[in-house]
Amino acid sequence: MSSYLESIKLREKYREVREYVKVGPIFLTRYEKARIVGARALQISFGAPILVEKPKDVIDPIKIAQLELKSQILPLTIRRTHPTDEEKFQDIPINKLILKKE
Image (cartoon, rainbow, N blue to C red; front, side, top):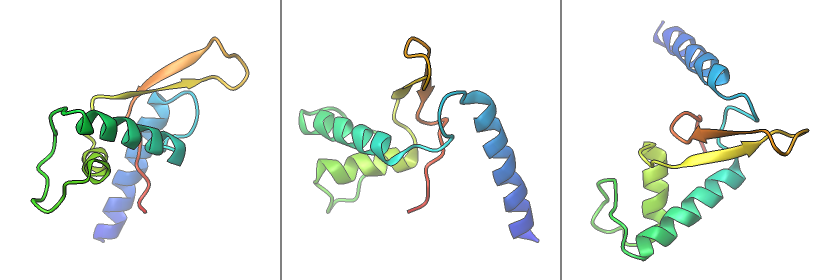
């Protein structure tokens, strides 16, 4: 019974995201994920504040950036251009996109 309710909630979330995202998939693509993690890791390595509680044994900026992305607290946006018209685009906050389970 709970899996049925979870399925309904997941469908509602997908529907809400689809209404918001007009350009591209509702999921964060692997290329966007790599770009975000790389950019955030660079910021962390230059001394930017860490936005998530990190385990004491984690010192790698890439791992920290992945933890921040997974918790969806990064204040970053993705700019997606329309496939047929390069002048049309949509800025999407990454917390609106769905992370695929890996």
